[in-house]
View: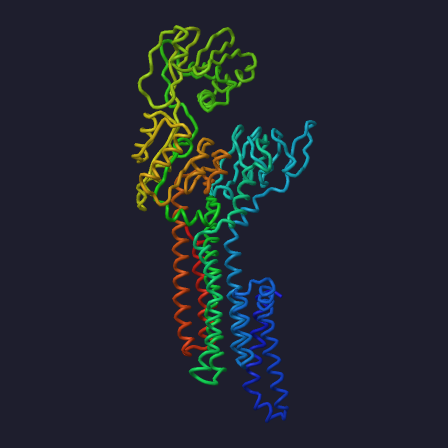
Length: 638
């Protein structure tokens, strides 16, 4: 029987029983109905109503006793209501059970509401993939069967089943379920796409880059499913509290029922047993047991709906106390995507010739610098794009020699191209003008033994980085650092642009770990969070109090080592996560304080006989419902 129907039927029978008990004397006189028969019918209605209302609670209490988990809320409610029923307080006993069930109904509703955002995440798991076979036929298979390098077809409206790169086609894709970003983005040929995204308006042919178990969608679901296993300190406290609290109040109730009628109010056992039963109902800790984990569950659900995956309520609680942030630079505060920022041609050569030369030398390379050079040439003009296609198709005919640590020497159509650092140019005895002190990576170019100029490549700062740092300062977080392996002048430039004063540059991965230890020791920080994205950040992410990884572009190792994953790669999401964490913790404190004050106050009143079962019901079920409603505010944080 559904809980809603269970409550309605029980309350209906209760109302009939109360009406019958009130008018039974009139019925007896007017219709000469046997008075005992009316009493039996009334009692039967009360009993049936009580059984319907309390059946599952009594069943759980018995199961708890059998399993040696005696002192729980089901046991307290069963003893209190059954005792009230036995001493003749039928209506109150049923009301206790009905209102307790109403509280349970509210709890279920609240939990289901919190699960909606997580359920929407679970819905991103694709059930099928369409692969293109060698003969051109398209076959439907399970995503687990698709191997790396396979071409899959994704039609409009379908989920992308595996991470990959667009091999053919162009379409708008919806990444809201992954990143929390409401606006769709354009995916063109060569762009990387994430599993769980939805292809919106055109068919895409995608070359898979990861197997299903290693894809983004699988990692997200694993994080979400595992999050509830990591309890906060508040949840652990409530679990321990209930373990000791419940036996104590049961013992206190027993003393209230026995000692006063033996030594103070001699012989009046009925009155003191009734007070003891009130005491039991009041003392039920369900408001705490339910509302605290529910608050954190709602907080985790709220965060996930915004593209912030937090791996447990313990990390959500830690975030609320975080007072030190240490940032990686590349890919975290900057885009991690190199772009050509300056072209300086010399002598008879033009900008387009420098880009063409560098493209020829880097045509077979997937290094970020090589990609940025090729992209700059492709996008320079229509003629450049056509020439790029020609160079690309003839790439196997280009003789390329890589000079370790210096650059590349390429031979194409009897022309010799040198593309690399100043050492490569100097080693080939070519006169050149050293580039001025510019911020970025300098690529020197020589054509047929003659210096042609240089190209500057730099990493762009994310548009949200500065506002994210300013927002952290506004909420009182002033211990902010940036650690990077980049050159000092570049690191200082980025830090000055976004407002970070504490900068450490030219660091190896082991250096980052050592600096984090120094910061923790020197600042005597309460909670330190490290924010990074690269594989070299994984050790620091793991050793920090809280590791925060940029999820969409971050490496797998960083995501697995982190405690919080920002799927939208937006530093401003850190502030959103902190806001959710602080709001959640405040609500938890409110619920604990409110519940304990009301309970202890009414328990004292019950001991002195100033309350009845209705007060007890409010102190238990009423407080529980109020705490649940308050906990649900967590899911509405904007």
